[in-house]
Length: 290
Image (cartoon, rainbow, N blue to C red):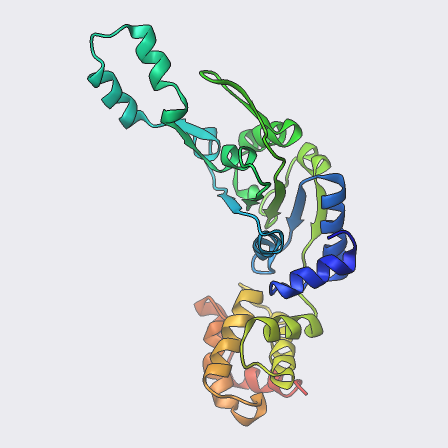
């Protein structure tokens, strides 16, 4: 895949409907062999980009889920301490140097996502999910890895990448990322899809969702997102709601306004939002849907 249109078509075939800017960003990621940072609200489909790319490339998806307190041992590698202790007990009395050389060998090394990603013979898709949840220290370490694609393990030496993975980083914007990390990556902001694209997403992912119903669902969700909600529904919630309506045999939202209101639980994730979305509000928003 080289051109923007080729990328968009390949992603669509795997079930991901990308806009032209995202397709361009992926095209440049391939051309420049740079990581791609996707930023946006939770639920807009950032993680799905990596999954779709793995499907398109026919590559393994290796995911590192970031969280506060994430360190190198959880992200890069650690030693299998239990097996090492067993080996020490089994070889008690042997030369100490020989035992040490044996237990700090590949046999006792546990790969974590980052090390696994650079040691694959075929480039995988490396998804570093929600990088904004990690600490500044881990971000600095990650920057070094993404610059050289090699790591140093004291007992084994420097391990250089066998292949360069396709790297996707996502951020929900819960904290500001460093300028150094942003400069290292290509950047794209993933926004909520417009009505037409969300309708296409519904038709691509939900079997039995026709054009008319998909457009109605997308318009209704767009209206709901404009309300003052604590948790704005993302694309995943839209797909849940569409699957529920199709499964319940709803051909047109206007035919079953009661059912439309009752199934909004697929979109609304807090008690506050459910209380705010009264039947009167649902009817008002449904009235705006053609």
